[in-house]
Image (cartoon, rainbow, N blue to C red):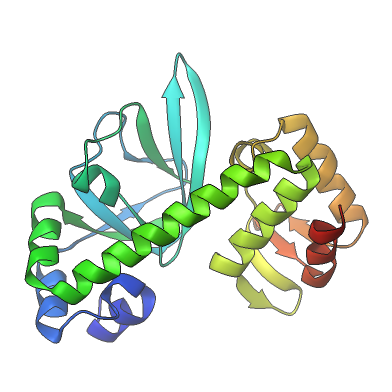
Length: 227
């Protein structure tokens, strides 16, 4: 990757010194994965931090042969920092939901970077606090109706990762089960709500291209406030 591209794509590196950026580019590994391929295998977390250049991934938990999607991430986001800074989580893996291009930095080199560049260290703390706040808000959503949970999940994906097109904000067509897991609702509730939103003209799904478009973000925000 080019220096300017990594600065613009990843907020963590927006404050890094030129020397840090050059060093990152020299030690980072570029990786490519196809849809449904495992990126991080179970019990193999904590060895590197990964930054998504393009594509979509899901972080999932597997316990007693039951799979639950914990989070869905896309372009500009990253994962693995918690496992490097603290004890690695067990029974967690990461899989590609689409074709994925990412760069990875080993745990040892990532820690070296934090010690070398105080600005990046501080930015890492800020991003960690931001994630904690998001998890707290997500926990609060459990008190809301299923439709609100799902709508706010869709809005977050669209505003964070979406691509603006003539049809609206475009994201990956995420499976109902994955959406249900992240929104903490049942698969049946998710299916029914998605049908409602399509009938109300709020979303459109192109199964051929695996695209979900939020076609009426104003109405979705209205629903989220009124329900």
